[in-house]
Image (cartoon, rainbow over all chains, first blue to last red; front, side, top):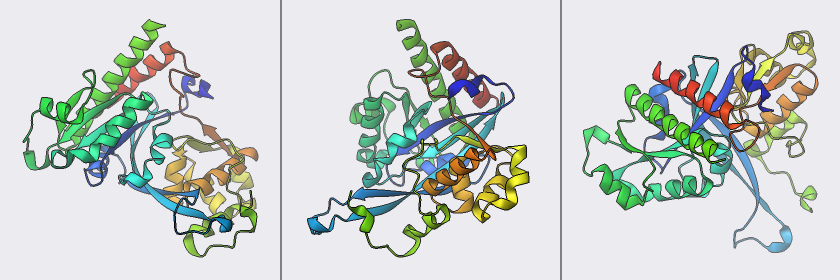
Length: 195
Length: 126
């Protein structure tokens, strides 16, 4: 499966997940650096209904449509980087697993006016061991809290990088992605040396 | 499972799977969202044998295109595109380029760190 990665003529797809609460600027971030207008695709999820308003003997299923926003960046060396925004609403957290599988890492975007919206993302990536960083979106240049304050409030572990960014600015998105991959590389090197 | 006798639901939620003959692809290996799909030379010979959606996939994958991007451009759910792509692949009309699976699985540490260095270099030179 992974052998294609070493074939020089063919492109290799890689991905980074952009996570965070609803309305925190994930699609803005993707759009700031994507070479295409961010696209939306839908997945239909069928689940056994867990609602209390169903009669158990009907064995009903519910179908939910989850929308995923994503963008694309062609890099040199035949690499194509896809950026996936996670669905923000809590009820779609089960999609995070699929989005994160095989990801280089994740950017957790934070709006300091609604810190609580980011707890779930920080927890999730810490738990599944995906390298991540926390990017504090500075809406209109606002920096009401220091990065240390945000780290403490979100209980972000010491090794996780943090940075400010303006999600509308391409250079900021680029810097954040570079910082994330540096972190992912350092993490990978550590585990290589440990084995 | 008793779900077979389930009455048909109405509207957009179910309709997409009519293009796959009702198959949901649960029996197929999962193609990653970012896996790149690429039409083979054979595809253009076979193109007329396929229905509209599959033929569109052949057209869109003249240049490698991710599964998730095909879904967006065709306005069809990801699951339905997976089934169509798997069909096309079994007929030799497309190839699927899987993403690297990371350090814990197929790629050894050296290859993976090498890949990350290339990605980093690529992002910095944007």
